[in-house]
Each structure stands twice: as C-alpha cells, then as structure tokens.
Length: 388
Image (cartoon, one colour):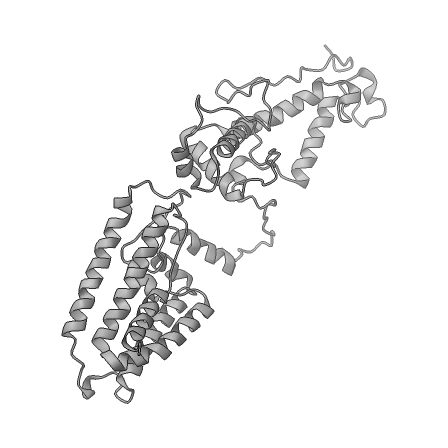
C-alpha cells in the first residue's frame, strides 16, 4: 500500500503480559480483592497493626489495599466510605505486611492500568472518548500532518503532555506520600546537601529496624534481659548503701561545695549532658538504644540510661528543680551512698515497671524516659523519714 493512500489504522489493542497480575472483571475498588481463603484472626491483626483496629475493619482494609496493588492504584486515595478513614500509619503497615507475605508485581500492575485506560479511550465511541476519536481518512485536511492525525496520535500527545506537566508516579515512588516530586534545579554545579537532608540520613541510621512491626517474641523474651539488668542495679544499690565511704576533702572534685550540693550538681550535669546529646544527630543511634525505653525493641541498658534522659526542656528543668529541692535535704539526712542507692534503684525499678506494663498492654510503640521514677523514690524516702 502506497503512502498516498492512507489505509485503516493499526489496532490499538495492547497485549497482556503473561507474568503480570490479573485483575478480575468484577473488581470493585471499595470491596477490594481477597488474598487468602479465610479472614485474619485477632492475634494476626495485632501482629500486623497492633491493638488499634477491629478485625472487620482490618480485614476490609487489607482487601482494599491488595485490590489496589492488583489494579495498579496504590497511589490513589482510599475508596473507603467510613466516618473515620484509616491513618497513614495503618495503610503503610498493611501494605508492608501484604508485600512481605503476598508479593505482587506492582510496577507491572501500574503499567497495565495505563494500558487499560488507553484501550478504553481508543475503543469508545467519539462522543464518549473524552475528546479523542479514531482515525478517519479526512482528518488530516486541516492538520499539519498530510496523512492525518488519528485518535492514537491525540492520545499519545495527551499523555506526553501529562508526563511533562506531572510525571507519573510508580509504586516505589509513592512511598513518601508527599503529593509532589522534588526536582533539583540544573544550575550546572553540584548542590550541597541541606541540613534537613543530613538530619534525615541520621534519622534513617538511628532507626533500630525499618520494619514498622515490632519483632515477634514471647513476654519472657521481651522482659527477661531487662529484669536481670534491673536486678543487677538493685544489688549494686544495696552494696553502695552499705559499703560507700566518703572521700577525704583533698579527693573531692568540688571541695568548696557541701557534699549534698556536689552530689545533686553531678546528677544535674549528667542529665543535662544527655539532653544536649539528643540535639546532636550523630548521637541519635546510640541514644535510641541505651537512653530510651521502648517496649517494641527493649534494650536492657535503657533501664538505667532512660533515668538520665530528657528530650523536652521543661521536663528537664522541672525534674532537676525538684531533685535539687528534695534531694539535698534527703542527702543531708542519709548520706551520699544511701542517697545514690535510693536514686538508682527507684529509677531502674520505674523503668522496668513501665516496660512491663506497656508490654502486657500491647503498647509496643510507646517510649518512656526521664528521671521522674528516681525523683519519686527520693521524694517518697524523704516523706517516710519526715512523717512527723
């Protein structure tokens, strides 16, 4: 056939890939797709989401998310008609669990979605084609193309324009859910990373794990190491109260300060140093492990480290003020050895009680820190000695 005699257009049908996920014809976005024969039990849902969602709502959310993966619509808004839509954290946890246990080629599913949209536009009638029509021999009379412009040409131009104005987002690009893509200006020079970018690198490095779910372990496995460490600190406190001997005047660090003031001042310095450390990004990884009490990822050393840890300025100032007012009085009455024994034993006991309580309640994402437990023990001891 010669070029002077335009023939019928080529078929716009795009073949389906054999290795791609199959979308059922009766798929509805608000119902989703089943990924297993039976619904998840309450215990399984607690492992996926924690105790923050009921079984019926959780199973429906997982079906909807799985259907979106098959349909290539992971980045679209959730089609759930609920008064309280699921939080972004629940969506991310559900997607992470599905991707780990029921793998799907989401990139291929997204490409198939684009292919379906092109196929629907090219196979529809002119009055239902969204402005696109199939090729007709006389379409090129008033066109710059002497051979005419078919509907496929218009569709191609339309999607090319969309890519220019708003680039298509693939599933791996939708993870941040920021709504926009950050593009760097082409200045011809290498751009130095901003402070926020540097801090983000420290945040990622400080993460104990990238899995949003806490590790699966029994209650004994979660609590036993911290219980043993707490017991060790309690034994040391008993030894300190019984065997501590004050140093001579020449051996004191601050000989001009009264012993009570020197002891409290040392504790204030230790707490303030950890407070400053939370402001230094390179310290976050170390502090997250040893100075923050998190039931989901328990570290035994955090039972003592969290007693000296504060992140909020008001928290530090309030605790240190109470420690100075009450601590100096108790110190004068019982001496340094017994005072430190009360402070340390009360602090680690409070940390372990917080860890055990949150673990039993399934609150694995809760974190605790601060000298409140130690100061409460100091205040209680002072009250017991001065009840009259």
